[in-house]
Structures are given as structure tokens and as C-alpha cells.
Image (tube, rainbow, N blue to C red; front, side, top):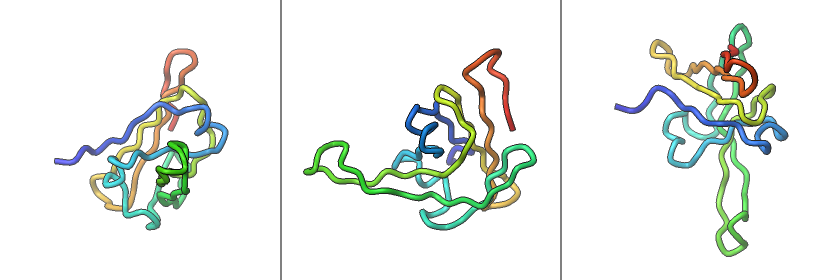
Length: 107
């Protein structure tokens, strides 16, 4: 059974560029790239989609894509936790575990 949770620690690049990186091996957790879905954080709701950009970070001989979900308000070191809604296929919830203080949850 596929996991119902996607979790990762936010990097300084993700904080600066306002997105959550989605690793290629975790793409199947989300709807197909380009299809919109609901992402909820507390009372905030946004329609988002997995997007990509071309990259040559491994050199020009190894071009590839990086996948991400646009989302603002995250800080480097925060842990983002995205859960599938078991009752609605295209609905997900996002929580942030702050890297500061007591590690409380937001959203």
C-alpha cells in the first residue's frame, strides 16, 4: 500500500523560491504533473499542481527535471508534512513543523 504521507525538511533554496521540492521517486504520491489539486494548511486552501523546471545541476551532459509544488511561508529547516485526504482523491493537507522553538505544528 502506498504511503499516505510525504515529508521532507525544507532547504534554503525552497524557502527562497517558495516551493516544496518533490523527488522523482515520490511523484506518484501526487496527481500527475500538471493536474491541479487542493492543498490545505489550516484554514488556507490553494489549488496547486506539481510543476517542473529543466536543470543541469549535474552538468550539461546530464540534463533532467526538478519537480516542485509552489507554497509560501516556509523556513529552511522546517519539516513539511503533506497528507492525502482519504475521503477525497484530489485533496491534501500541509503541516509545517517549525525548526525553531518547541517544534510546534502550523496548519
